[in-house]
Length: 369
Image (tube, rainbow, N blue to C red; front, side, top):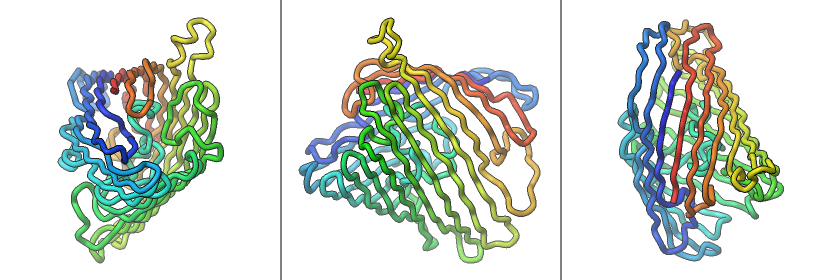
């Protein structure tokens, strides 16, 4: 069993109108305490340790008229992260965007690759503190150029671009990543990147599709990966539901290395307790949270290699999370202040015969202003 205690401090907003002539600070600090139960299978004695999920500093802003020609930008750096490699430390976002109203914008620089609904969810809008597992199989931030925009009141969100290097490391072998997404919300708002909304928000639903194609490596050792992600979400009254499904394949040029497939899905839901007549106002921002997910990151199409141990990252897993969350103040408002906390129990099961005690209790809090 794993016990996590985290505190996050966020100053500024995750997404702002990039045309108000002012640069806004972005500060994120999320330390944690983790307690792990003993596990004889892994010869793990258990115990507690302190860690840091993220420590970020940056600014976002722009010039111009948000309904006409505008120029915006964002710069954000990751200052520290427990257990991360060197690529996780350094510049996280560094881009400029030239656009005309929210309908269209050309973004250049280090930016998020548009391939996952969960990645689009802001810190204030994410339903659960930990992202779904399929997110780890998709590219995060890369150097490149993209075209993106919104039609209507989020009736259609689109994004697509070409990218040439993870982090600040440009591709030196002439290979590129192509990625894009379309999200259709017939009724408009709420914003499909908001996973957790409060009563009074307009009801609606969205469906979307993301795809990527990437070639990497030197001639003779190159691999081609393509993947598709289907997504959906809905908000009605006191209930929010969302989910994604991933299928991807990697074709390797070297015949000595087998091709492989990865697949997975998750579905998650939150129910607002504001319908309870007693203390309705106090319970307006109290949520029941849940997620169910299955993920297999590596399925060889030739010889199946044996798993090495219960922590083998290629092992297929099933997990679910149940929890309770609360938000104080005006939650999830861009540029506004809010406080939120959640307690979730994560149950994890390996599906290939190498089980271990990896259940966990996560206590997470966040302040935003």
